Image (cartoon, rainbow, N blue to C red):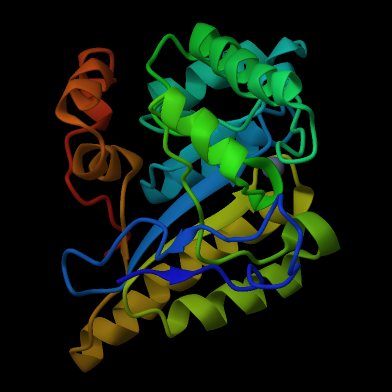
Length: 262
Ligand SMILES: [Zn+2]
């Protein structure tokens, strides 16, 4: 059912990163409609993350924020984490210092995972249900480290590369094209630390809204946005889900499918 990530097959003979992560990253569409889940990595950044949050609030979208532990130490960052949680998003662990986990020595890699978890858990005051390895790095040692901690890496399907080129227009063009032909469930990777993301996100969500109006008029399947809480309920073990729900902002977690349907 799953296929390996593109680009994962190279590097023959390299022991560290011989395989990619399974895709689709968040399973199959449950509605039969194209379903999109937004994820934002590398924050929190008190300058850019609040703008991303403003846009998500405007469009009623709940996302997953893969935070970096050391970012929480910056002035104002804890308040941003608190806002992320209060607005119904979910915080997940993207390590303490954004290290490349298959290149560090074993103890350093473990510290990246565990310190990141503690810093984010402390700031969010919520369970941290997922982990995302920086650069998508994967190796047998990391698999074992995650298994030991009963943590799952949460991969992505669509990477507009805005972290690399920093161009909002290019990000919008790419995402509207790829989302326009999406048929199953797709996890989008963006970065709440990047101006390109801040600029592109409103355009992308507005495009989805308008595209759905066109599709409705034509009787075609509309694009749904899967909320972070819905995916948590679907994918987490019941005990973890219950822990999360106990401290969730219940008023924000009412809907099963948050969507930007008109
Ligand atoms: Zn990252």
